[in-house]
View 1 (cartoon, rainbow over the protein chains, first blue to last red):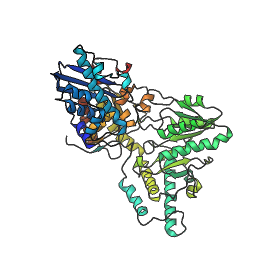
View 2: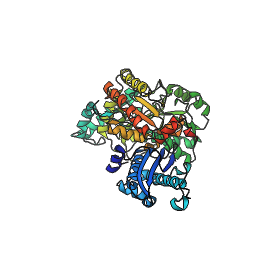
View 3: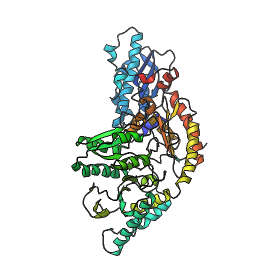
View 4: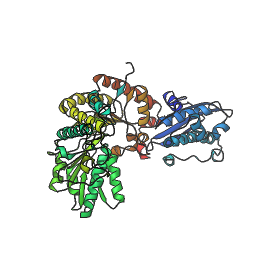
Length: 142
Length: 398
């Protein structure tokens, strides 16, 4: 198995690691049994994602995709984050080994889970906007 | 401490040592004759193979004509198991006994036989990774054609009571095969005294090149071929002999078995220091038996982190090790060995295997002891699972 230089660079120097106190949306996907958990924190101001942080338990690809996903949405309107696909994360990382593609799906879902939480806190039904995010048990083995 | 180069994955493979390469060189250069050819250049190769066979036999307490050279451990395992099945099936013997935590070369071969009408009993191991010989005895049936138990486990280093199992099999008149790929050179082996009928070994674990191994087949056992096509290896294994590698294997096994107690003493001291220091890390555990263990094997799980991330981080620090996490097993499940000894998935994901070899020193241990705790701490700091462990949540209930 070979990781691209970009994956290794993001693994060695992950961007936006940590937590946000008083975050406007927090989402967690994956589970311990599968070996991947991603937790995303969003700060949203006037429809713009002003800050994003993540914590990840998982393999090198899980860390790199989390890191890249945060980079791709930081400073962007919420609408852009809603449109973020796992494919875009993979492309930005110059590709992922096939067996690791599920990590990129998890990164996309982690952002959607955080946005779901954000809309819920606003009293808005998230499902028509974000879609359905699989719960922890269901996200294994994608 | 400055960044070092610390290779501690000797159960995965080893480098070719200088004396081995030196022994091989004549056959990689001028002595390229086909051992089947009648002229002197060919006969030189044939003589080198014969001498190598004598050396390998001597190292195992076997007779020279009981050794067959192969391409490695996997081929030897396949040959022993599939061809024992072929030989015994016509006699109505279609039952194989093995264990749940064998190397995949044995497990997948057993599963293949199951698809072809054979029955397999998988003996469990205890939480230390040990097979109870009484379980083997109970499982033997009149139609059992083979018992296959690995000598020492590649992941957690547990050394099995091979002589006891051998005695049982001999009494019950059932052939006994052992995959000794990890044991050769680390544990004294005498196939005659231990009542072993078939034994697989590999060269590249003991500083010989990759792609060479051997199968010991006791006199009186006449397995059919796995590879047909020529008169090599007394017509038992076709293919022009890999003379240089065979010579290398012989040199390597001669050196590896020259003074096993000295190696055990030196490496187990380094191993124990690493184990004791790494177990000071909170929420860590040693996998496998602390005593009945290969002298170079360390296998520790750190809760809250994932093995591949740990390996990649250690790689950045110059340490080359291994793990039983799903990400490194190439599937979604972590190591079958770690699950077999009862580890929850989440703990199995966070395992680190360090396997010491001839080249490793106390300074390597110092570097590992300094680097691993920092790395674990760094990964835990970014792990949402670790947060939950700190909050005493039952993370394995999911």
